[in-house]
Each structure stands twice: as structure tokens, then as C-alpha cells.
Length: 102
Image (tube, rainbow, N blue to C red; front, side):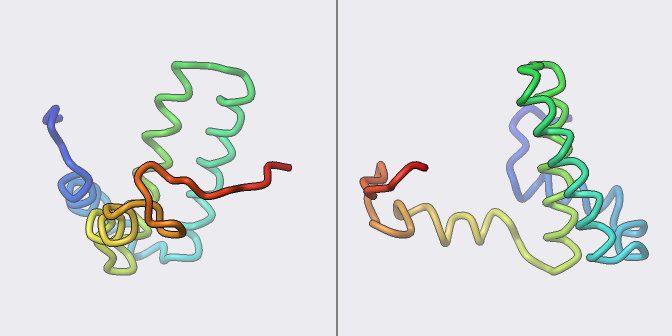
């Protein structure tokens, strides 16, 4: 895989490789697969397992790209639109929002 693969290129790669299966499965079932991968990521975080963390972050991102492909959303575009100018809430870089942590 190309080392300088960007978000848009990765999303396109996932679409080229898996869209025929993903579109047959549909968005609702694909979301279930995504949720399972998030659960696997949670376990890797809980166990502080670096090897599995890397794998699970990659899997979660791939399934997120899959859902974006199914809905026709360009992840790179929407992320830039929402976050490139700074925090969506306060507008600052870095964020200066006052948050209450519970």
C-alpha cells in the first residue's frame, strides 16, 4: 500500500475492493459490522494491547469508509468542512471550550 495514502484515496481503495459486497449487505448490516469492530477496539484499549490497537483502529476506519461509500459521503470533504477552521463549537485552534468532565 502506498505510504502517503490520504483519506480520500483510502476511501476509494475500500470502495474498489469491497463495494460490490457492501452494497449487497446494505447500510444497516454494515453498521452492525462497524459496531463489532468498535467493540474489538474497546477491548484492545482496555487491555492496552498495542498490536491489536493498530489493527482495530485500521478496521474501524475501513468500516467507517465503507458506510460513507454506501451513503455517497466523501469523508475527507466533510471532515475538512467541519474541522479544518478550528473547533466546530468555539472556532479556536486549539479548542478552548470549557468542558465539564464527569
